[in-house]
Length: 241
Image 1: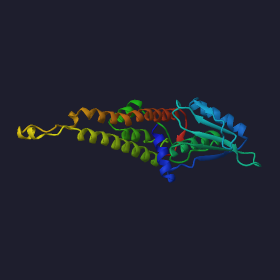
Image 2: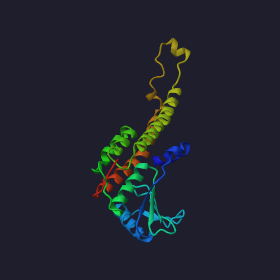
Image 3: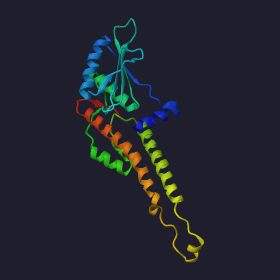
Image 4: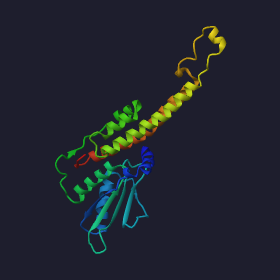
């Protein structure tokens, strides 16, 4: 869900928009389609065929229950070429690169190259626990040694959660503090204490509500990040990240 906010950021800063990843595969789009479906079903079967192919022959998208986030296209390299092209797009450049590496190993039988490593699993409990402290810590945990994140993905996600907490929590805190009762002249004459701590304000509940907003959003994102990473870790793939 946080990537909906990222999309807004991408519109504000076009240079952040990812260009997608493509590979060329020998054979017809129909043959490539059979192989692609086998890979997608192996990882997670919750995807569907999109009718609007944007000039390609086939297009597949993930469903909301699928922890991966992708638009995958199959088309012809050219009208005269017998070979096919496979293109993958995702809100995260890290996930685009992850898919490309999977396709290169599965479809092209390409060696992952020096520095590539197999994935270890990640813990849902740790990811969700860190989220209760701060969503940024959960993002850091999930992005560490994971092909799902590039350095830019990590920075953007952390920045959005930081700004969300800063704006919502800061606004709620200011509202609660500004609505504390003020001392009147009689309170001053009686030397009574001031209005008290902001946490004693009846509006302090708004601060906790604001804290819950970003953590609720991140709870779903953390589930997706951990689930997608662990699904990819089940197979004998190696990744560079």
